[in-house]
Image (tube, rainbow over all chains, first blue to last red; front, top):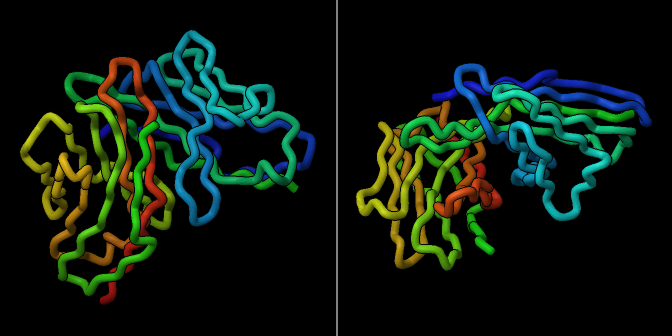
Length: 117
Length: 116
């Protein structure tokens, strides 16, 4: 299967600071990447869809000015949590769409645990 | 809007036995994809198996197979010869076949425990 990396795996920051999380597709080009948030013992909640070269599409209730998404290349999307607060602490997961040939499947990164103090 | 329901929050099985995880979904579309993803304690989401709705044949990947009942909108996952490494959260997911529709709709998950 396709490989997606995510960096950092863990980050601790102070309230009010900004944090950037990177998502990379390592062995394929991904015109579309997705950002999810997962609370403990819960399912994944889609935050936004990131399309290379265009603005991200945010899900209802997700603040686009707080969660900035940039998809500047076919292998990299970034999520920046601006002015982070303790309630932003969560597990953030990205995925990348692999639609080579007949596949068209999302592959996931290993996730980033964000803790805001 | 499509919904996915996993009615079993937790399941357990003895090692080497067979277990079936349930998933039902609701959609008005005729063509779509269904997936099972596994999330072990590392929290890395791993694709287990995928099914295209237009295919009548049930998908199989080694010890993992599905029972896809389109009319009943049911998509269960059978794990044969369960191994300790199968312990994880399992998520059922739906994706529309419509061109440009890319979002996955996830179920609530089923936590599978393997008893040695």
